[in-house]
Length: 78
Length: 112
Image (cartoon, rainbow over all chains, first blue to last red; front, top):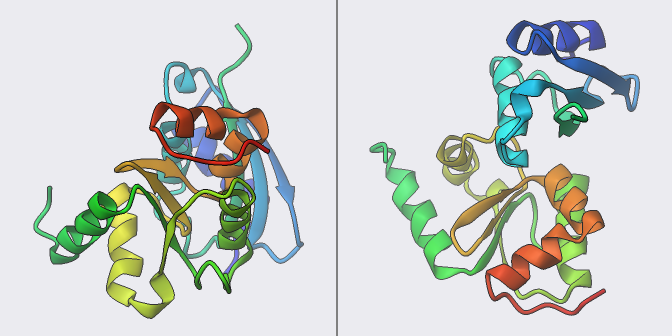
């Protein structure tokens, strides 16, 4: 089971069209990535809510097809 | 709350334990790097917590993900509130927000 970075990015952008997405492949196995996501949608949301929005964008792949995604989320600097 | 029978089991654990970590393995022998990272932060701060090994109970392992709408393990709960997984706890630890949250919730710890 694995995913490629471009697929992860497109799923996130589908759900968060304005998002700036930076993905780093941590081990080259398609299973362990780190992602930084910046979006206006995160304004006023807690970190947990922000991460849940990204997980929802991945439509259930998180924890299954995708074992690890180190997430850093933030709203754009005002 | 949904009628998932395991939710009641989960809720009672959350109610009975001020600091509760759903993890892979146990605090002495974490079985996954992400779980070990959270155990490390809590241990360094000398916070008393209970670890629940989801590898011992498949029902809880899946139930907790639905319960908190969070797809991965570990999951940290403090005074009934879901705080986050490994990334969020690490980020909060580094920014000092974890210490502030423990202060706000009256949880004892050793300032590091």
